[in-house]
Amino acid sequence: MLLSRLSRAAAALRRGLATSAQSNAKVAVLGASGGIGQPLSLLLKNSPLVSHLNLYDIAHTPGVAADLSHIETRAEVKGFIGPEQLPECLKGCEVVVIPAGVPRKPGMTRDDLFNTNATIVANLTAACAKHSPEAMICIISNPVNSTIPITSEVFKKHGVYNPNRIFGVTTLDIVRANTFVAELKGLDPARVNVPVVGGHAGKTIIPLISQCTPKVEFPQDQLETLTGRIQEAGTEVVKAKAGAGSATLSMAYAGARFVFSVLDAMNGKEGVIECSFVRSEETECPYFSTPLLLGKNGIEKNLGIGKISPYEEKMITEAMSELKASIKKGEEFVKSMK
Image 1: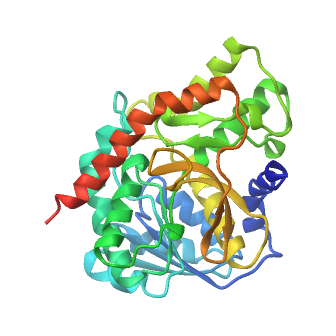
Image 2: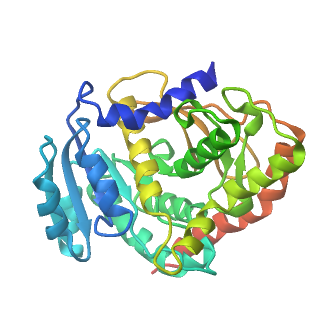
């Protein structure tokens, strides 16, 4: 039942782009001029779930906003540029999506982005804590395994922390798993659902192929190759782009899918399930991605890991030390900030 519900999550993007569902959500994109920010803003502008779209960045946002504002959909688009305009951008927003930061280059791990992106995320989330403390915060900026603990610690510092409203967007891992499984089995990817748990980097990305709907089976060697491809799919794109960036278009799609699910749930739709990297008590790790039942106030229920195979169990065990280290790194970063 959980997975049949989960399978509806993939339809969130299509619902978000359909004309039947409508809401009056005010959404902000922080980092809206970048490689992820622009296509993500385009998808959000295209959705009847969004009535107001505020775009923020340190450059080019007036142009991006002017361009998007000509599209014949109802979302009212405004551009904000520079830190002095950030408070106004965030005022009254129900959802804030943060793809800001620098992308990976060939040879870089997500962790190599830490120093630059940690500061960017800490500053942006501090503004969120001050000016939109009740908003759903969706973090795309890598390394997610550290930027979510950073966001949590920043919100704690400001006395407005609510773990049910802070999400690490890992949706691209699920989207990739669905696509790769569908390719191997000759299925329609829109009808495939693979929960992905753990974190959002390398071996911390743990696809639960045993829980896939429809049920699929692979010989162990093929399963290991498939798992490795899902874990390293981001690097596949970084290499293919040969220095011109990382996964931006597929990430924008996945980010939009997640935001539409959050908005659907806020609008009272029942049975909305997405995986996300959040504060968790499901494992010994203080943050962990699992399927979540979303509701009007964010996380309604953590659905946990569920029944898994010995191979998946082994992967979770092996991911723990890296995951804990990335989490600690994020927490320590905020503690050391002036």
